[in-house]
Image 1 (cartoon, rainbow, N blue to C red):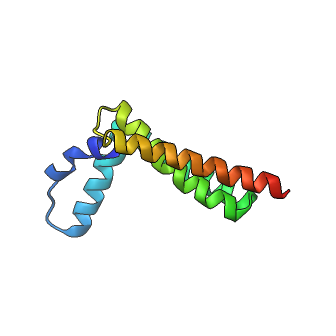
Image 2: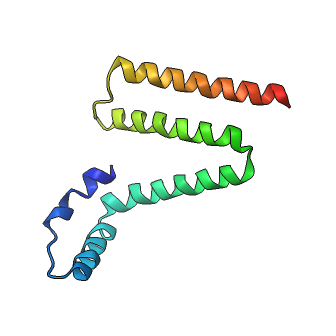
Length: 110
């Protein structure tokens, strides 16, 4: 979503690198198509760090990283992107199975 919304950024041309940077930032942050997915992304990052701070790292890190891949593939499919067919679905199933095994292992230890 961020990639699609930032497509017009290549049309911004300024004389100096500082003016270029400021104009690009202005272009992006005044574009609501870019700003909404960006803020959603930042909320996800905040949730990730809060989760890491409050849970067991041996469980939280693999789960968060694996679920990031799964959610990326799901959202990509919803947006009409090609996700890789049966191999991607098989990878998601294996990822979710691995997450379930991690959770089961963690629960059985406590």
